[in-house]
Image (cartoon, rainbow, N blue to C red; front, side):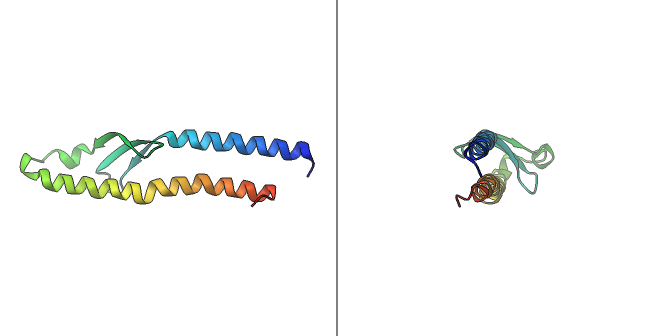
Length: 104
């Protein structure tokens, strides 16, 4: 592989990485049970939370503890499964590119 080809590949890799990082800066996740949809920033901070209307329509104040537990389970599902999978996809493609360059 000549130097120009290597530079083009490295530039493409950098562009791809910037696009993937940008996509992770703010992303929406929906829990498997569709109870909650959260929007998180790149630092894994919840910046928005939306509850499924069908799930909460019959709740009363007495149901508050159950609702809190359901939200904790749903958010934990997101942060333990979906978000790491997104990051693995991003870094996995980077590793594949490094392998292609012979740098892995």
